[in-house]
Image 1 (cartoon, rainbow, N blue to C red):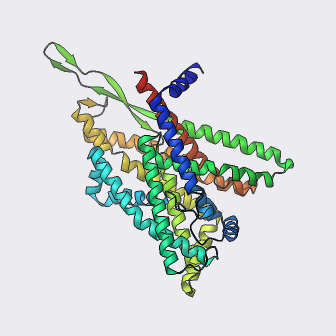
Image 2: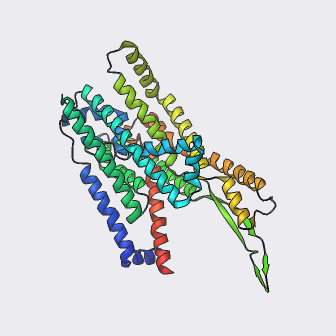
Image 3: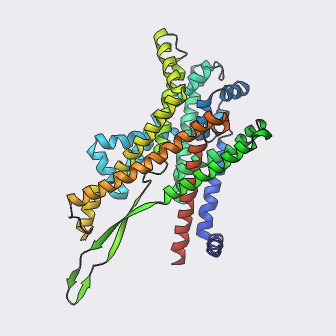
Length: 423
């Protein structure tokens, strides 16, 4: 405890860290202010009724930072930017040039890669903004605003999406932690008072044992998330001895840490984006005056509305995206090549191809555990809703995973800043 309070004192006394924390809080304050500014032509009463009867848009509202509940100028949140990042990550598989740009060209290459993701955000925001407005117009939430009204609102929504993306990047550069993750975290936390008030309405004293069981389950999930997030498999590495004159260099032993959950919360965010986008399209197509299109859209919505099919599909997406993101961000061949260039080797394993295969084998086994854990956490709230009937916890597992992971990441970033200043 003394160490914790000592570090807390260092954080409060250090002007640099204090400035970063205040900048992050200020940026989140601007984000919440923007989430309260609605676009023109919204019927607030119909919007609330529509969101109350639609779990899909309720979930989307959480990840837009609450902006969708008021149809604010940032109603899309960081969704278009995340979707653009997903597309760019997928392109690295098909394009060796993009893969080299992302993995081999260092910081400059990653900046160019991020710039392409930003450019892709603009058309995606226009498409998603138009789809939302057309769908909400069909539901009577937005009145007949005409062509000029559509162009104006789509321009506002697109600009809002770019603005929130810029705020996220400013947090990453001048604040603490990953900006996009912190914005999603802020959206989830901002939703807590609403969830508590909804829970207070349905509170039943006779169900206290079940509520306690849910609380214990939540604490166990938090413990599991912390353990899996922090768990790593060390691979021993030895540097070869080199003799230069009368001095001997190298010969030291260290280790290469492979994390159990190498991908973090990214696979769940990817999977949610993939699940939400088709639902939004089918919700729009249901109102098209073409019989076969309406039939296909209703069948797709019925399939996605089935909790069993939805849960299985969700689990598979999270599982696959965990392997995919790990493969994109961690290249065993590059690790083996770098070890060989620096005169290092894994004891008992030949340098080169054998080292790459050895690391890949270990990584595959670790990712199996991490992917299974993420998939279980993702579908856990759906199972809890089916067992308890409490819809307030419909997004609990995913939200809890993101919140805990972001908090751990922020604590590590602050601790790193403190360590730098101590030295």
